[in-house]
Image (cartoon, rainbow, N blue to C red):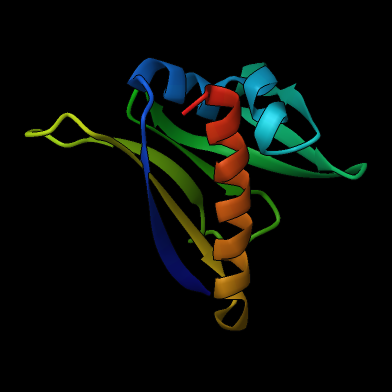
Amino acid sequence: MTKFEIEYPIKSSVKVLYDGLTDSSKLTEWFCDEIRLMDNGNRMEFFWDGSGQIAKIVSKKENKFIRFHWEDEDDETYFEMKIQIDEITNDVALFVTDFAEDDEVEEAKMLWDNQIKDLFQILGA
């Protein structure tokens, strides 16, 4: 597996962006079709075209980041969405970290590009 990171500059408040990354109703607007919360929200089952995949929330910090681990994946892998603010300009950026098979990294990046574009549209960013 290859780890990769993508940076997306965004014109949004940190609070609105964080809600878009962590709130299950907002996630279904850009990330997946449906979410089923499990274990008091510590695990989520994401659905695409009727097929589900369970992810555990490994860690999160309000208005900073959320990190998930797919239950059926290698223990060392995760996907993370992290918000960073430039100390000088106050510009906001979203950093996505994920893992993909060596020959699927570019395809995975394109998938994230499309999903983040949808996120930006619903946030009006």
